Length: 428
Ligand code: FES
Ligand code: FE
Picture 1 (tube, protein in one colour):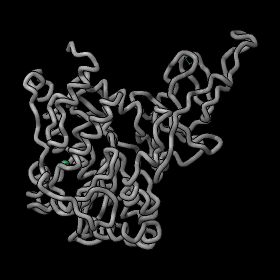
Picture 2 (tube, helix red, strand yellow; picture 1 turned 90 degrees about the horizontal axis):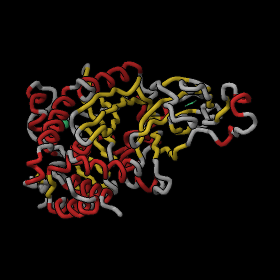
Picture 3 (cartoon, rainbow, N blue to C red; picture 1 turned 90 degrees about the vertical axis):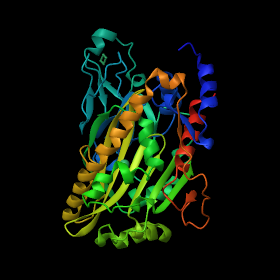
Picture 4 (tube, helix red, strand yellow; picture 1 turned 120 degrees about the horizontal axis):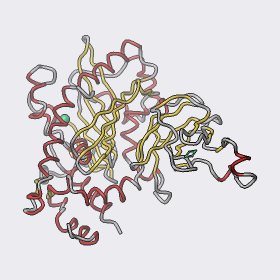
């Protein structure tokens, strides 16, 4: 508790040793570590805030959160997308208290300042009476936050000096294309949200590396006959593309093509042939975009056919030992209606808030986080073992970019994720 910030940074450097596969327990809930994460990761990184299809028309908006700050993502009257601070410039009231809607203007609930959906301040009640000629409304617009778009995913950053989104994503874009550029995609309904008493990092850690837990954590699902038994989750590739981003690619799919057949020509046109070749064989793909996005394509049999489902979620930190999950389901816009319904159903059954996989996973995150809160863990420096797969060498002949292992039972991606995390939170 008496540690200064620079002592803490030194302690982190001394005790977190990703290359040796040593990750100490205290990082999963320590309030001081959380403070560093907020400041050095969540106030700086590019974070996902919305999919373009959520705000297709002029006036559409959604409210989201970025580094603990509420923002309004608007499709302005001028056709531009903007990310605006949801903070009235008069006295700081939260301007918009709805999750989504369509509005030309936002009127502040405190004193009634009125802002256009482009952020401009256009009206002040009794302006002449209360300000005379002294108020220049043009200096009082809502603060605009830097944003950029890749594959219809809208990202924003609170750091004006951050590298471009393109550079931040780097080679993970090649794999994001499989999820979001294979066809025109649209979000189904509103994101589902739920709270978990576990740290966001365990979500990302599980996403980027952990196919191994499927055997045991999700063992009951295999017993029900809904997924194969045995080590099916081992086969495929574990890939790291830099900046904390990586994925597990499950292939081949013994059950055949899991995407709508009527879109095959569109897939071929929009993807590189190597990407299309992977899509053809894909059983599943689980991508972590650092710090806290999980993208999942998975497939199952429903009504006698292989149906894939595509989703995106964020593990949003709400405290040192808790998070809120927001999860979006996406479908091909031009898929048959019946197929879209099956795809959504497949997602609900497996990874929706009450999905059979989902409940297994969050139990693990909760118990690990709660364990780590005991002061005993810090006192004894209890450390976990992340050495799996250290005896393996990456393969050279994979068609996509990244450091590639031909085996998903590996913790190489977690080691790389925690190295990136440590470098970020200990940066000067
Ligand atoms: Fe918004 Fe005063 S705080 S009008
Ligand atoms: Fe899982």
